[in-house]
Amino acid sequence: MEKTVVVITGCSSGIGLGLAVRLASDASRGFKVYATMRNLGKKERLLESVRDGHMDTLEILQMDVTDQQSVVSAAQKIKEQRVDVLVCNAGVGLMGPLECHSYQNMKTIFDVNFFGTISTIQAFLPGMKHRKSGKIIVSGSVGGLQGVPFNAVYCASKFAVEGLCESLAIILQHFNIHVSLIECGPVNTSFLHNMQRTDLDNSRLQETDLETRALYHQYLHHCQMIFRDAAQDTEDILQVFMEAINAPSPALRYFTTQFFMPLTKLKLTSTNGSDYVKAMHQFVFSSNQKRDDKA
Ligand SMILES: NC(=O)c1ccc[n+]([C@@H]2O[C@H](COP(=O)([O-])OP(=O)(O)OC[C@H]3O[C@@H](n4cnc5c(N)ncnc54)[C@H](OP(=O)(O)O)[C@@H]3O)[C@@H](O)[C@H]2O)c1
Image 1 (cartoon, rainbow, N blue to C red):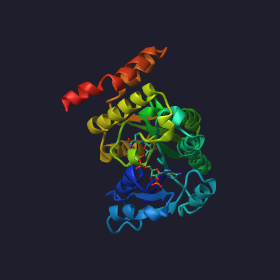
Image 2 (cartoon, rainbow, N blue to C red):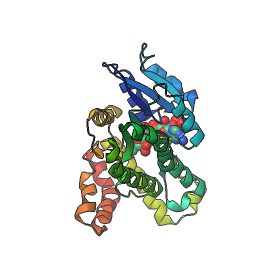
Image 3 (cartoon, rainbow, N blue to C red):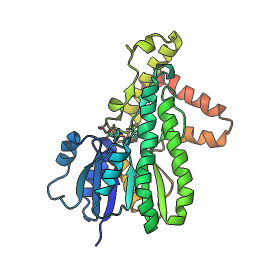
């Protein structure tokens, strides 16, 4: 039986690595995974995670999603010359007060999260259209659906990804290509560690007003608590990816957690946005004490 050919971006760690291992080790041996990463020097972790005997189900390719040439040359190395499932997963976070971010930092976030997703889709879409078949699965975020304080640029990049995917999903119905966003809340990966973050000793932060600094301190504490209390394990996220990959007709959105749903729904039920803004403020800045008491 022909294997389902899957290309995944950002497989050096976290969700991408986990998904590559999950698919390459699938008991059906029905998947051929092209696990891509920008730095092949990091491939050992992936290789160590798959047991022996996956020569026929796993290949590792270099792909930096911000480098179009690298995306195109990875695409040319797909032996089957077709991709059934494209997983746009590479992503990076940016946290801090807006006035502390350099233009270059912000641009990098959009280059990876938004333009990187576009470049990857552009590379594989013509083939999928030609065959009138394919699935495009994107690592989305609750932060792509609702604003999160001190994550404005990351959220903006993920909002942009939402607009991209929702718009594509409409037209791609004609080509039997399904676009799906896996909307993750906090996940226990290296994401927090890998993200670009304004540190407390950052000189730009020292130059901001006292109130912003105090709120940022509070936010960092909240973030720590949320990851402690509500972060999901990668395995839980992978199950949702598998649901989308195996669905004959995958939906546009899959939520990995219901934790943020009351806040997400506020955007639809209270359309002028004020209730969401108040509720999110309360969630972040008024609940630290309660959660501390609970701990
Ligand atoms: N973890 C969470 O809490 C969370 C929540 C919501 C959404 N997400 C989304 O889930 C996705 C995966 O994140 P994760 O949690 O697995 O974090 P992660 O462990 O930090 O993985 C991110 C991956 O993206 C790769 N990457 C970064 N820039 C790249 C580039 N220019 N080209 C190719 N790959 C690049 C990283 O490679 P390097 O090792 O080379 O940097 C790494 O493999 C991201 O899109 C993220 O926005 C995560």
